[in-house]
Length: 210
Image 1 (cartoon, rainbow, N blue to C red):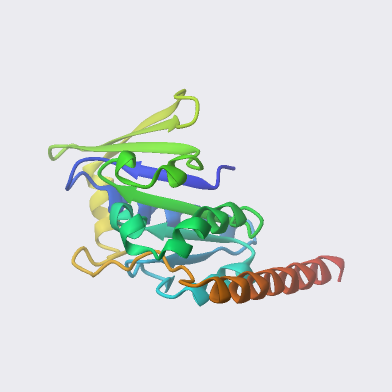
Image 2: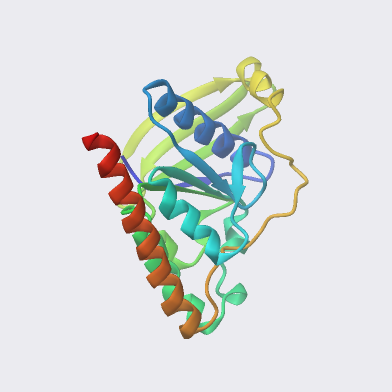
């Protein structure tokens, strides 16, 4: 499975709605098969843990199965909001998520609004459009090759059922992308992240063996 999904579309097209829906849908599918997936977000997604400080990545490492949802990616993944050191390690963290079995979902009006280093790791681009009161068209594309993957239509009557679940607050403030700001913090962060990752993997293996 891909680990980096980017959802784009005009304002009011249903980007955050689709990201929230997909995160909960995939989580439910895993849970129905006896597994577990933790949700993390920077906008208060229902049943998710907040990603507001770089130490929250330790919980992602402990989960060994998660989905992180990033709303307003054009602001969260902006060089202007990162320290000079943070700019250099952003993609290091995002490359590490695969090892932690963590899927990343990003949301913005256009993928070209985010830093090029994020675009380099995005695997699936999802275009969403609201078609009046009829529903939403959703197109999945392999971003790195440009190849069409899948297209589907979500009728409004189904979408309204999801709206009633109140998966997120449209007017909630969005957090940035949490990064260490100094080299010292970064060294301590990666050491602790690896420690939590290895502890979680060891526990997972122990459960499988027993």
